[in-house]
Length: 437
Image (tube, rainbow, N blue to C red; front, side, top):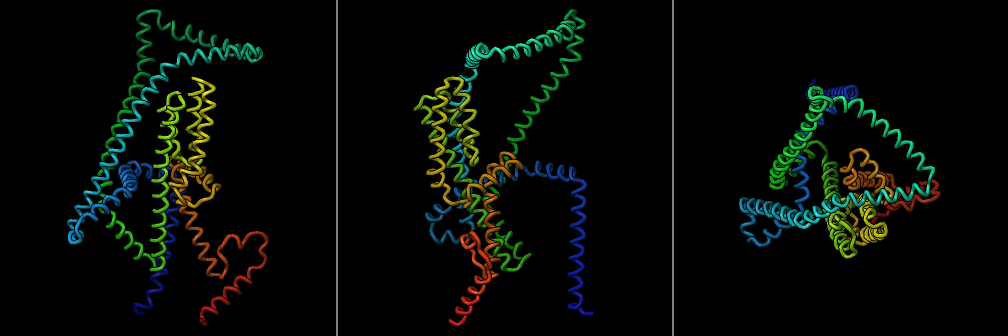
């Protein structure tokens, strides 16, 4: 048996081995799901700086390309052909993009943080006044509704009796003498304080770990931006080595389209939310709403979430304003409706354009699905991810329809279509006519 005769048996054996190995891996993953999930959680925690660096590089890539294009235009053609000079220009563009991003973040924090701090301090100082307002409102409400008052008073009386019994049975006996007090502190209070101290120390350690991860992420982002072309070329080599040329072209094209959708949506949404936050701050100051900086920050941040973001941000802000002035809360609700109509119908389409191409139903569906699976990150990234999946499915369906000689437009399938053979016959006639010409 020569080498060519052994080739089909070798391919069949490798295919059978791959199927058996995949089945065993699937069996292990299903019956050891917790261990597999724990492994991936540990792996994600280890690689978290890399993921954060990839996100930073992804956000800085448009800025980096713009700066590099400007630097290349100001450089002579002779020097742009030199790899060392281009590497130096690339590194300069990376440094300038990082400095520009840090400058923008600093300016935003310098403008927003002092006002947010003043708003939070004013809110804390106003809590006693809010409590008095709530007490007066409850008193008037109970006077107008004696049945509810009797029910609430019975619950209040039982709670007061339970509190008095707890004080007489647990607290006061432990305070009768110095020895019992010290014993009570040693057995009950100090262990709880130890847990509180451990929790506080855990928060501090977590913050330090986050700072460390951010520093590593900045370094990773620099490496990714510096070697992005090499990584892209290596990825293409892998794709074309595993698949046929036509399938490789399809995969590369889909990846480019996915990057276009993702970058267009995320960068556009960040710019849109920044503009909405600034407009909200200006209008809140003009309309004399309380806590303008705090309200504008919440509105701007939650506006990143499509569809539900305006409502998520407006509810707590409206409650804060309601505690100060109920009438202003009504005006604030009207203002938010006008602002979101402006964002949804004018500003958003102008910035985002047709970056996703999804209908409103699919936007809502993707937010609910990915938000339920992945939380806040899923709500933000669900729309562009689903848009990529939707685009791939649409192109596959269109390709299969064309291969069957059927129309691609959705309008051709509206209503009662009947047999589709006439489309196939028409496509065959068109092909025959094109072949003759």
